[in-house]
Length: 338
Ligand code: 1CP
Image (tube, rainbow, N blue to C red; front, side, top):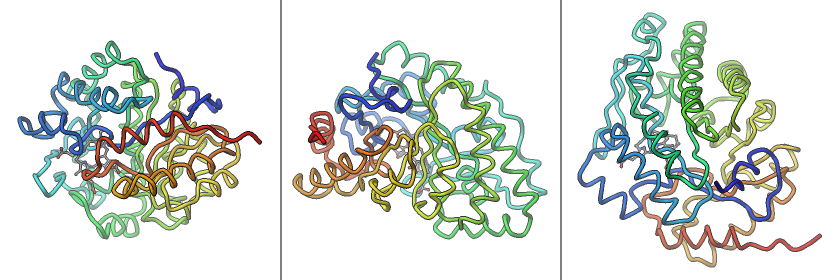
């Protein structure tokens, strides 16, 4: 198996910079579209052979250094007794919504048997892959936003109302989700994933004060409890939380483009970094794209180690050919000595 990604996760500088992309499997890819025309998204997630095939597509087409399991952060919600749907054009719907302490009764113990399709997909992939497989889960907070809001939102009004009206209840919810997420990720690790990424997509909606109270202790507990494989912590819009991110002790921190990666390396000494190209640079010219990719590679030179990635998922309008050229560019990039 190709080790370069795992070496970088462990803080070892590698001969070339490993690269993979969040949402590297998805609708920008014709091979994905072909399957997606026949099945809805949840069916794809719940059919291990399809999930495995779609996971493999970007590895074959792009030549990336790691695969990420094809699934969704909301999948484990079904295993704690909630209902998850994906409505075409509209996105996810979760029910019932948990908005008060009284609603916590809807949350049961995580039943792994209900989501055995996830582990079956991992078992298939471990046999077929020649690069490491990344497992994942949402952070307890990001998961909570979907359960409280019932889907995607811009304002997070219900989340913050719960947080500030019933802080103790909110802590209870975070505690329940931390235990469930730990159990879910440990089962992925036991089944064979080589690294895990915690997606904290919405952490950036909080003030540093509230991140410290309501999110940080739970993420820290998760990271400390996941010992055997590298843990990548992803968040976005969180440059203002950098002093807290530093103290999470994740093996790798994934950062977005709103911070210069050079500044991040200065602020986060001895921290392996992942990131941080703006995904929409892929919609522009190759000249502008490579200029910015080079800036990321050179900027990350001072980091303990670096895994090249976007600051968020691949956009649906991305050209596969350009993304492949970006992979080659990263792999072939020669740093000037000194
Ligand atoms: O084909 C389709 O219509 C489905 C589109 C799609 C895909 C391809 C969704 C719906 N999820 C996914 C896959 C997915 N989601 C992966 C697979 C692996 C890969 O990266 O290739 C992963 C890791 C996720 C994680 C995920 N789901 C996150 C965290 C990462 C991020 O993008 O911030 C979030 C927030 C979700 C929720 C979600 N899933 C899908 C939608 C439309 C949404 C809502 C997003 C929102 O609230 O804005």
